Length: 73
Image 1 (cartoon, rainbow, N blue to C red):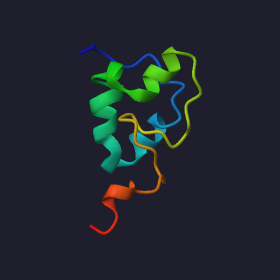
Image 2 (cartoon, one colour):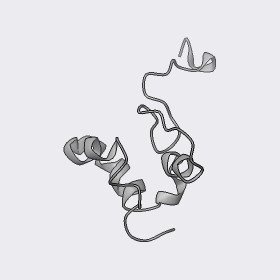
Image 3 (cartoon, helix red, strand yellow):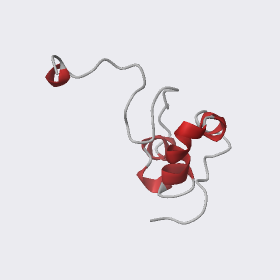
């Protein structure tokens, strides 16, 4: 696990949200200031790929429809 803060903290569009929304601080602690190499946003930035604003560090997309397998549960 890498140490210190992610080098993309200043340019990440989600980090300011994580800072002000206390219920989202788990993302900040787990990825931005923890295991940032596991962050999908970090990985995409390193490859020079676009990063959707609604992409979470674990790869989930905010507002994405539930998978077909989850319907009816």
